[in-house]
Image (tube, rainbow, N blue to C red; front, side):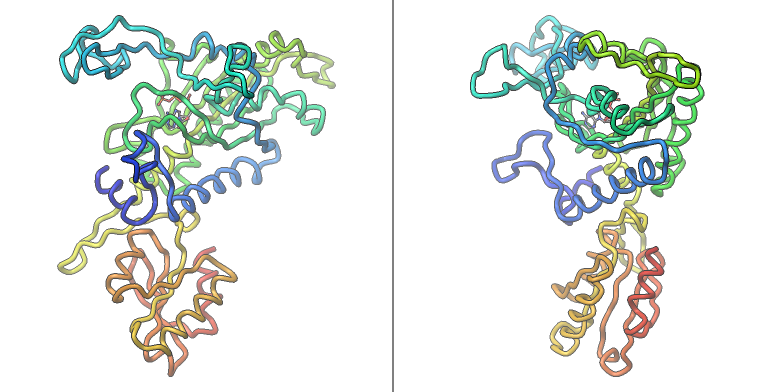
Length: 429
Ligand code: ATP
């Protein structure tokens, strides 16, 4: 993990939040490469879950929702962890993590009795801070899709089974955040709520587990680092009949990337009860009205980005040196092509390289870099996962050819400049 976190900072993937002020604990800011990687991941998810299917519609709901939503969902009543505070060092611990419920694991001071601690962030809507305008930051994106169920039925008239998909921020006042971006208090989720007949729910649940597991494989994550873990009955959330996690083998142990849950008809029934609006579905062939069951594949953007970075990190011996390379897939890699002049003190070469980069930029993601000697430039590009380096040298001025180096094989081929764009587009597609 130390190697990955240090690369993330060194190369501009992820920085500590508010770092110049000493940092705000467990907040992270995505830098130039991090934001590209994150956007590529979200795009890949949206493509697989919305564009490539006929049965899923996208949406984007508000973070702030009516307070009754969280009563109906059970979050006001059930969304808490038990915690104990140290009377001496004032640190707070999750009771479930403690070996001894009365002794502080850090300073051996006395702990308070364990007390429930609601994980939802609270704030006030409008200028007056009183109980009547207390609202919460959403702890999951899911509820935004349940409360729009009727709007979707009335505007798009989908037939069961169908799903809604959403990517967005969620907030949880976690007691024990940590492991870099793995557990934070502000994070992004990618969630699908898939509505189906109660009779098909078990089968649909099983097929989503396979579908989602295969999606992680399609990102290029190694199969041996992924596994499925079915929850025991006593682990299930209050709304779930069954749940399976897809876990990644992080350096700190196997941990959840995504949970696939059978939420039954709990959510639509609860929102019908609390809102007074009937959220049943009418099957016009069978002439039946019923509450659909919901299968929910719910993943974390930040956790997937972290797994992808850990999985892609490689160190290789090249002659006497160690090469660090991020072997990110073509789609995910934040950097596709870098154009480098072999000699940065030769203006004709620099100008030609800049022109080539400028031309490539119109069709693909390319950068120009002349801030170091060629060996250093290659090392830098390998560390951010750049798929191809195009080098312009003295000979290029004569023969109008450039050298293209492949990140993974390090093999170099000479390509004529007028064929370069076509060559790279083919390699990247
Ligand atoms: P955990 O058991 O790790 O706390 P969870 O089971 O509470 O996770 P869910 O409620 O199923 O998580 O949320 C769905 C997904 O949202 C998780 O699989 C994870 O990828 C992401 N997620 C949840 N909590 C956090 C967090 N604090 N930081 C980053 N991502 C999170």
